[in-house]
Image (cartoon, rainbow, N blue to C red; front, top):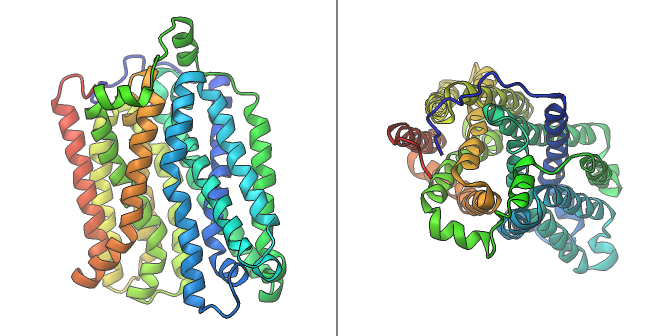
Length: 432
């Protein structure tokens, strides 16, 4: 992989078929991520409906968050298994299967009986369906990056991967907006009676629509060429990754650490942190979060396009430096009173768009015969570890070092990203 070099066919343009592939992939990714995250926006009604009524509210909500976290823990299993068959049987089959596996449990959650109807079977069924969702998203994200990267000209891999990442971000924003709309339009009694089911039923139906739309996609030219030349791995692709591509695995896990810090801390945790630590009103906190999420979608496209122009290593270096500065600007602004909170949060959201460069580096780090397996295992394991540890770690750091601790943590991972970029720029040919 030559992550430092600018692609030689920079004049290549995306054709109509490429654009259709990117559009359908991004749309499916947005719907699938909506299905995955909408769960957390309805944690309160789920905690009231799926556990005994005499449970302490904090305990019931903690159990719901535990079920939500189970989806993250299932991601490595789903990603590794689906990537194995993606390297063996084709990218398209797994790309379609992943969105089907997300649509089915999402629709199922919307139809589940509650505790008052079936007792403890209700939370067990909820947990089972959440685990299936985790399996699905574990295969979807790396599979989608590989799929779009192998469809477009080499000089447009950055934009292709970033457009998919931007679509995933839109799914998070869509979930937030749907949750806000339902909570505004329904009384608390109606929300508990039927309103909580609506986002899951809608998500499931649109998920099956995404399955149907992906039928029109074709297998990637890269996999077709490997199949024709009989270059597919005979044994376990993951075993070959572990034996021959350890530097690529290390690279992928390090940049994924930066990705998780940026997303989990600045996008997912900051709305709650600013309320508890800086006394920002809830409505203003979530307004800032929606603006930041939109800016993130735009930022992904910007940095993806930038990586096509100057190379992903240079784009990572610039973007990581911007992430460091924007994270500190946001939290220092909050410490000074938060007068410009929404504007600074928008800037921080745009800076988080550097995550659009991460899949480009990972796609280029692994050769095609083991690309899906290498990327999926590295990304999903790193995301499960760092994504799972980040929330409690941030809580400990805030207690120990004060309200600027989230910015310090993001800055540390941004420095790590800059170090990876510098190492790639200094090493001829980048990492294998």
